[in-house]
Amino acid sequence: MKSTFSATHCRGMLNACNQSALELNKSSNLPSQVSIG
Image (cartoon, rainbow, N blue to C red; front, side, top):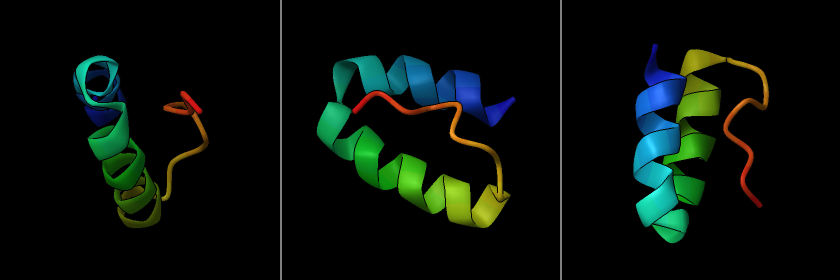
């Protein structure tokens, strides 16, 4: 349930989200669900 929190936060910080999403993807090994690029 981290993708939701990330996506919500990403809406306000696309720059920070890009880095967070990349780290989360590698740490959580989740699919590209938080792709807002």
